[in-house]
Amino acid sequence: MNAVVVYYSRYGSTERYARWIAEELDADLIPAGKCRFRDLEPYDTIVYGGGIYSGGIRGIELITKNWYKGLNEKRVLCFGVGITIEEEANRKQAMEINFGKRFVTDAEEDKDRPEEADPDLKELLRVKLLPIPCWFLPGAFDPSRLRRFDKGVMKLVRKMMADDPANAKILEYIDRGCDLVDKSRIGEIVAAAKDGREDE
Image (cartoon, rainbow, N blue to C red):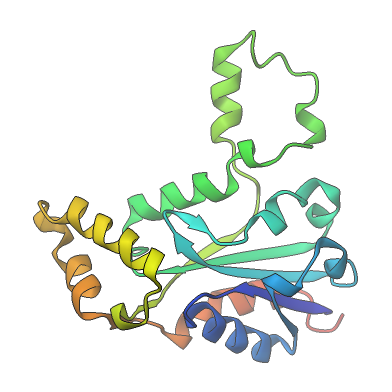
């Protein structure tokens, strides 16, 4: 197995997971900012991880935009890291945001389809997901380390969530910070990456 782990980490949680996974797979480790599509060509197994911001996995376009340019012929696994991913609704939304067909502009099987003439078909394609396995892992949050822009975003998020008692735990994380990072959660990703390829 010739593997690489690519990661986008703003505050460190995603990098921690990426390093653990790379160690388990004996894989190369590359920050997303230093990785281009052509850099992935030598690898048969690619693991991509990024922090989740407003439902989007940061930098995931490296995978989704290039899926039909050869990545679909490789083993590709993804993971997103955040503090609200334990909710099923949030995970479902994140899957649609990150892997919905609308993110892919060069899908061969969708060429010449009459989307505009058939609203139902257009809607079907909109929610069609790329066949990329993705895991959602708990992250960490330290309000004292937030950059100015992120502070503004979190202030707005807190205001929007304040009236719903169901958000009490998340509000506590926002106010006091948290570290939910759990190394044991990488087990399924590592197993999926190794499945049938240990001797390759």
